[in-house]
Length: 301
Image (cartoon, rainbow, N blue to C red; front, side, top):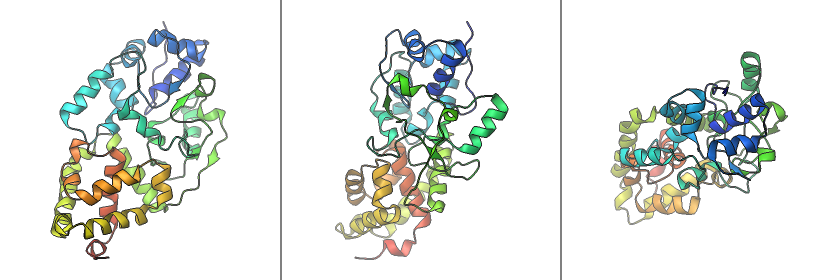
């Protein structure tokens, strides 16, 4: 039976939307055929039925997992054991509630927790493939610029999380897009997008030594031995650096994040591969240390 193959960087959920159109059958029937159960809602970023998708497309399971889900991004800082356990659990066909993926959507109530697309990529896709699709790089948490065209992404009124099939089956070309206004500089937005791309493509492991070097610098500043004064300064500067609006919109869970920063500022980075934080939180810490003057970290405010 014919089944379309995914385009470069296409999410599996996007592939299923296109499969529905190519096959001329309702989207919810595609879901039922793959999972064996009827679904009234779909979590757009939560991978499921990967083995059946691999079989239907004639592709290897790991090729689907690594190139067409957010698994590489989610596991970028996990231990090998944790990463492998998650990989094994994703073989199950039926959609499941997965805490490892649910945080990716951002704050569910936020207008920014929506499907996003690059208008220039959309035109490229229409020219090359004759249809549009949802790119993984455009829906990563905290990412609002396209790394290919260096242009702002457009939003939609379609949530990234749970969504009814009637709304879930839209493609980017179906939506005119909504301009997204963010309280963060283009320089930082580009940095978040580029580092997120590295994490998704599995390139961040090569930077763990760099991250550990930042951790060592933090320890040299005395952040672990200042009776909480300097760590509080660090967390305060982190909040000012990104702004509470951006941290809230992207659902960084700032109170918990701040508490961890204040308690163990260096240890959290030195053990980055143990997934103490989400991938986005690690990336925000890394970008902060790369861009923020070290002298500020040493102020006793």
